[in-house]
Length: 193
Image (cartoon, rainbow, N blue to C red):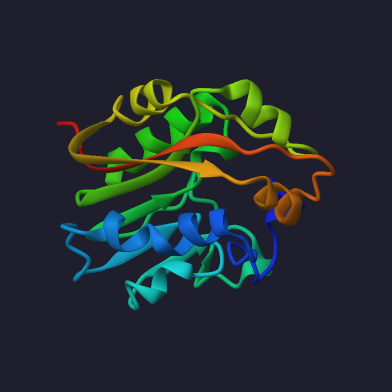
Protein backbone atom coordinates (compact mmCIF):
# COMPACT_ATOMS: atom_id res chain seq x y z
CA UNK A 1 0.00 0.00 0.00
CA UNK A 2 1.64 3.18 -1.23
CA UNK A 3 0.96 6.55 0.37
CA UNK A 4 1.90 9.30 -2.10
CA UNK A 5 2.24 11.94 0.62
CA UNK A 6 4.97 9.83 2.23
CA UNK A 7 7.11 8.95 -0.78
CA UNK A 8 10.58 10.11 -1.66
CA UNK A 9 13.94 10.75 -0.08
CA UNK A 10 12.74 13.98 1.57
CA UNK A 11 10.37 12.05 3.87
CA UNK A 12 10.47 13.38 7.45
CA UNK A 13 12.56 16.40 6.49
CA UNK A 14 9.67 18.82 6.09
CA UNK A 15 10.68 22.36 7.10
CA UNK A 16 8.55 22.85 10.22
CA UNK A 17 8.99 22.47 13.96
CA UNK A 18 6.69 19.44 14.39
CA UNK A 19 8.54 17.37 11.79
CA UNK A 20 11.85 18.44 13.33
CA UNK A 21 10.65 17.34 16.78
CA UNK A 22 9.22 13.99 15.63
CA UNK A 23 11.97 12.90 13.25
CA UNK A 24 15.00 14.48 14.86
CA UNK A 25 14.83 16.20 18.24
CA UNK A 26 13.03 13.37 20.04
CA UNK A 27 15.53 10.68 19.05
CA UNK A 28 18.14 11.20 21.81
CA UNK A 29 15.36 10.72 24.40
CA UNK A 30 13.86 7.77 22.51
CA UNK A 31 17.21 5.98 22.30
CA UNK A 32 18.40 6.86 25.82
CA UNK A 33 18.98 3.62 27.72
CA UNK A 34 18.34 1.42 24.65
CA UNK A 35 21.17 -0.86 23.54
CA UNK A 36 21.81 0.04 19.90
CA UNK A 37 25.28 -1.55 19.64
CA UNK A 38 24.26 -4.75 17.86
CA UNK A 39 22.33 -5.51 14.70
CA UNK A 40 19.57 -2.92 14.43
CA UNK A 41 16.69 -2.83 11.94
CA UNK A 42 14.55 0.20 11.23
CA UNK A 43 11.24 -1.35 10.10
CA UNK A 44 9.21 1.02 7.96
CA UNK A 45 12.27 3.26 8.25
CA UNK A 46 11.68 5.16 5.03
CA UNK A 47 14.81 6.98 3.92
CA UNK A 48 17.06 5.95 6.80
CA UNK A 49 16.75 8.93 9.15
CA UNK A 50 17.60 6.66 12.12
CA UNK A 51 21.17 6.27 10.78
CA UNK A 52 22.05 9.69 12.21
CA UNK A 53 21.96 8.05 15.67
CA UNK A 54 22.45 4.39 14.77
CA UNK A 55 24.76 4.35 11.73
CA UNK A 56 24.65 0.57 11.31
CA UNK A 57 20.82 0.44 11.26
CA UNK A 58 19.37 -1.48 8.33
CA UNK A 59 16.33 0.26 6.88
CA UNK A 60 13.52 -2.07 5.79
CA UNK A 61 10.71 -0.41 3.85
CA UNK A 62 8.56 -1.42 0.87
CA UNK A 63 8.69 2.03 -0.77
CA UNK A 64 11.54 1.98 -3.27
CA UNK A 65 11.32 5.80 -3.70
CA UNK A 66 12.82 6.22 -0.24
CA UNK A 67 15.91 4.12 -1.03
CA UNK A 68 15.74 1.64 1.88
CA UNK A 69 18.59 -0.82 2.46
CA UNK A 70 16.11 -3.69 2.08
CA UNK A 71 12.97 -3.21 0.01
CA UNK A 72 10.44 -5.52 1.68
CA UNK A 73 7.05 -5.52 3.37
CA UNK A 74 7.63 -5.65 7.14
CA UNK A 75 4.34 -7.52 7.54
CA UNK A 76 6.01 -10.62 6.05
CA UNK A 77 9.74 -9.85 6.25
CA UNK A 78 11.91 -11.95 8.57
CA UNK A 79 15.38 -10.78 9.61
CA UNK A 80 17.79 -11.47 12.46
CA UNK A 81 18.41 -8.41 14.58
CA UNK A 82 19.19 -7.57 18.20
CA UNK A 83 16.84 -4.56 18.10
CA UNK A 84 14.00 -3.63 15.80
CA UNK A 85 12.86 -0.01 15.76
CA UNK A 86 9.25 0.44 14.64
CA UNK A 87 8.78 4.21 14.32
CA UNK A 88 5.56 5.91 13.15
CA UNK A 89 4.24 2.82 11.35
CA UNK A 90 1.08 1.72 13.18
CA UNK A 91 -1.19 4.48 11.82
CA UNK A 92 -0.75 3.04 8.31
CA UNK A 93 -2.67 -0.11 9.28
CA UNK A 94 -6.05 -1.04 10.71
CA UNK A 95 -6.05 -2.86 14.07
CA UNK A 96 -6.14 -6.36 12.59
CA UNK A 97 -3.05 -5.64 10.46
CA UNK A 98 -1.20 -4.14 13.44
CA UNK A 99 -1.99 -7.26 15.47
CA UNK A 100 -0.82 -9.51 12.63
CA UNK A 101 2.43 -7.53 12.20
CA UNK A 102 3.29 -7.60 15.90
CA UNK A 103 2.37 -11.30 16.20
CA UNK A 104 4.52 -12.06 13.14
CA UNK A 105 7.46 -10.16 14.65
CA UNK A 106 7.04 -11.93 18.00
CA UNK A 107 7.12 -15.31 16.23
CA UNK A 108 10.74 -14.90 15.09
CA UNK A 109 12.38 -11.86 16.74
CA UNK A 110 14.25 -12.78 19.93
CA UNK A 111 15.63 -9.32 20.64
CA UNK A 112 14.03 -6.10 21.81
CA UNK A 113 11.48 -3.97 19.98
CA UNK A 114 11.47 -0.18 20.26
CA UNK A 115 8.06 1.12 19.22
CA UNK A 116 7.77 4.88 18.70
CA UNK A 117 4.25 5.98 17.81
CA UNK A 118 2.18 9.12 18.13
CA UNK A 119 -1.33 8.91 19.57
CA UNK A 120 -4.18 11.36 20.06
CA UNK A 121 -6.78 11.93 22.75
CA UNK A 122 -8.65 14.20 20.34
CA UNK A 123 -9.20 11.97 17.32
CA UNK A 124 -11.67 14.44 15.80
CA UNK A 125 -8.95 17.11 15.49
CA UNK A 126 -6.40 14.60 14.16
CA UNK A 127 -8.78 13.26 11.51
CA UNK A 128 -9.89 16.78 10.50
CA UNK A 129 -6.27 17.66 9.71
CA UNK A 130 -5.57 14.41 7.89
CA UNK A 131 -6.87 15.47 4.48
CA UNK A 132 -6.36 13.36 1.39
CA UNK A 133 -5.07 10.32 3.25
CA UNK A 134 -6.48 7.21 4.88
CA UNK A 135 -4.87 6.46 8.22
CA UNK A 136 -5.86 4.77 11.48
CA UNK A 137 -5.29 7.13 14.37
CA UNK A 138 -5.62 5.87 17.94
CA UNK A 139 -5.69 7.08 21.51
CA UNK A 140 -2.67 6.37 23.75
CA UNK A 141 -4.59 3.63 25.59
CA UNK A 142 -5.70 1.95 22.36
CA UNK A 143 -2.15 2.08 20.99
CA UNK A 144 -0.71 0.52 24.16
CA UNK A 145 -3.28 -2.30 24.13
CA UNK A 146 -2.44 -3.20 20.53
CA UNK A 147 1.32 -3.16 21.05
CA UNK A 148 1.21 -5.10 24.31
CA UNK A 149 -0.89 -8.04 23.07
CA UNK A 150 2.26 -9.87 21.94
CA UNK A 151 4.97 -7.75 23.53
CA UNK A 152 5.84 -7.05 27.18
CA UNK A 153 6.88 -3.46 28.00
CA UNK A 154 10.34 -3.07 29.51
CA UNK A 155 10.20 0.73 29.65
CA UNK A 156 7.87 3.48 28.47
CA UNK A 157 8.34 7.20 27.93
CA UNK A 158 5.73 9.69 26.78
CA UNK A 159 6.13 13.18 25.40
CA UNK A 160 3.28 15.66 25.01
CA UNK A 161 3.61 18.25 22.26
CA UNK A 162 1.56 20.37 19.89
CA UNK A 163 1.33 19.54 16.21
CA UNK A 164 1.43 22.94 14.59
CA UNK A 165 -0.77 23.77 11.61
CA UNK A 166 2.32 24.22 9.43
CA UNK A 167 3.00 20.47 9.66
CA UNK A 168 -0.20 19.74 7.74
CA UNK A 169 0.40 22.53 5.23
CA UNK A 170 3.78 21.09 4.30
CA UNK A 171 2.94 17.41 4.52
CA UNK A 172 -0.59 17.23 3.12
CA UNK A 173 -1.14 20.63 1.49
CA UNK A 174 -4.02 21.19 3.90
CA UNK A 175 -5.65 24.54 2.99
CA UNK A 176 -6.84 25.40 6.51
CA UNK A 177 -5.21 23.20 9.18
CA UNK A 178 -5.40 23.67 12.93
CA UNK A 179 -2.89 22.81 15.61
CA UNK A 180 -3.69 20.16 18.21
CA UNK A 181 -2.07 18.24 21.04
CA UNK A 182 -0.49 14.85 20.51
CA UNK A 183 1.31 12.24 22.62
CA UNK A 184 4.42 10.41 21.56
CA UNK A 185 4.70 6.95 23.12
CA UNK A 186 8.18 5.41 23.19
CA UNK A 187 8.09 1.81 24.42
CA UNK A 188 10.90 -0.70 24.62
CA UNK A 189 9.48 -4.22 24.60
CA UNK A 190 10.35 -7.89 24.59
CA UNK A 191 8.26 -10.71 23.15
CA UNK A 192 5.85 -12.33 25.60
CA UNK A 193 6.81 -15.92 26.38
